[in-house]
Image 1 (cartoon, one colour):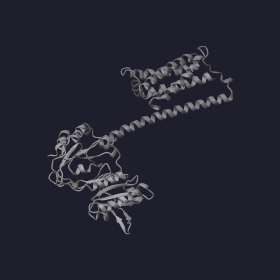
Image 2: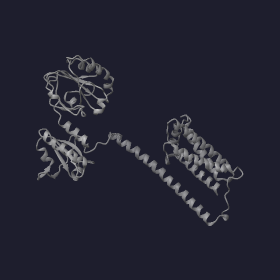
Image 3: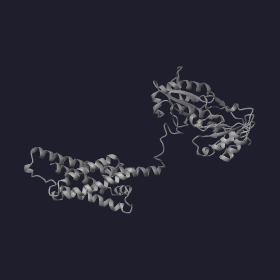
Image 4: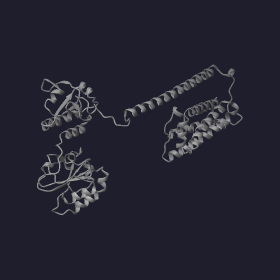
Length: 446
């Protein structure tokens, strides 16, 4: 019975593999090519291989052919194990495609282990010799338990076959639906790989609401807009630790930016749902009744949103630099609008900018060779304090995560530079690129 069980199991596995590969010849050919079969031979081998597997499955069922079928299965498994082992050794993990579309996943150690188990079963049949590879006993000699087990096995095999057939057709139907969906997305100009933007679409009408104000009365979006300023709605939730930690900053923004911005904290599930808020704290900027920004999720994103919303108007050459406070690497702050009494070349920088890194040694050389009476360079950089400390500059470095100073002073990116004169006025056009930046940074003249 052990030999017969091994034959039946091997026959079932290789029959399923052969049929599945024939139903997905294109996928089988692609898989063979990934394993190293020449592309010109892969389509033909995609047909030959499943036919050989089916032949071995048939041979395993017939008593007089079973020994040869087991040898055929053993030979195929040795080839499979060797091909998978070579691929894994080279760091490649092509799709096994062992059972066509029914099971297609990257090869791994488990794939090798599975084939080793099947090879052991084939070895059991081969070891019995050609004269005895298991014979089908007469049904009259079978006990009622053995007959019941056989009937159960047949029902199970038929069930598996039916499920496999249904799964295959479901996969094909799913493939057709995906092709149609891609055609629709292409026609509508939809990029399926584009990141999902949280919140309501920018430019859409902001939904109105009615909430009870902290000081009594009803607060609506319309009443907030009556102040004539853009509105930042900060969505919070009771019991949210990050929301509670942000409340002092919300109060400070309401006070500091009262002349330019209306900041309102909203606690209410209904409003959050309407504005498609998935997590708190979150915030959105509304201008003239329309959504002006994507939903900012998390404290840092909210801080950036408020900072962008309260930036001074851009200035040009000949205009005074407005007040704009930026933190330095030591936790202090510097107001760009307070730069007076000395000419200051301002360098806009980013540790992650490849062009910046190409000229970093030139900037450090300028720092080392600067004459005592030469203007001191001021670097305004994005990135973390740690990343900027690693740059190793001698000049003072201010942090500007949102590139706000660059926007106000007319810089479009990094590296770029501009001169602020002794009266705090923009004294040069913005220099872009290494030559122009080094010229401005080096002498401080327009």
